[in-house]
Image 1 (cartoon, one colour):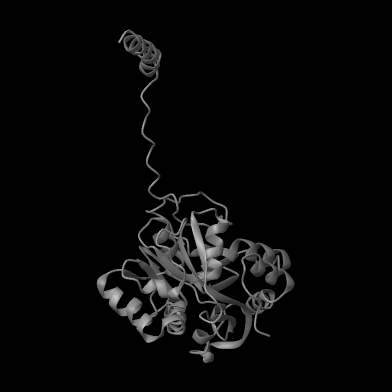
Image 2 (cartoon, rainbow, N blue to C red):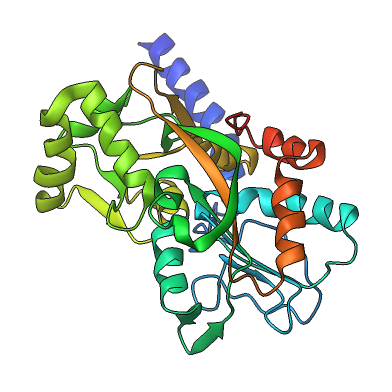
Length: 320
């Protein structure tokens, strides 16, 4: 009994310093919340000078670039190539220093086509921009819809699909068939105006037949677990990053770029037998206001300097 009492006394003495230390230490503050717009675009570095006023979530127009006043070249690019613009325009200006005032749009190709058909005007909020393009670049299937627009066209790159998921892949998505699971929230490009949407539907057919396509594009849309985007190359990565969607079929280059930025995402490869290949084509507009600039830009896309930029962002070589 004495020995037990002695042990209790020693234990009490041992606890005194720890309690005193705990009293002396300040209470640990909870970690501050992460910024609400920590992943918001624009992800490109601005290449024009002037007073910088970009407020994430409020004033932020990431798919319009450059000079709207008296441009020397106007390019309407399919949106999925926004990541190449910093390097591409810098290298183009090196090769053609006579073109400094350049305006570029990287909206969905279907939206750009509507804009061209309506005379070139675009309205964003309270802003109206009325510029006719010198060059229109999109997937071949989209370009083939309006061959009468172009003086000539040229293939300059190819791409393929991948699946973007959050870091750690919490829903254990391994392939396209997993996007049909009811519990997997999918961010899906709207085929109505996104060229990639129709190509992903083709891939669903390859991976799981009509049943998979119906599950993702009909049943899950009605249930609310497939979200159809308005501008997938911005919305899909952000929905995954902000845990609004679990998976997003995207162009491989878009998933690669998000990892290049250091964002907490992973890229799920799609096997070749289930994948598709997109052929990107640029056209010189017959009604190009700056015809020589258009010719120079389209030629630059397939030049060694232009192709080096596309390789940097994991685009595939063009169709010969």
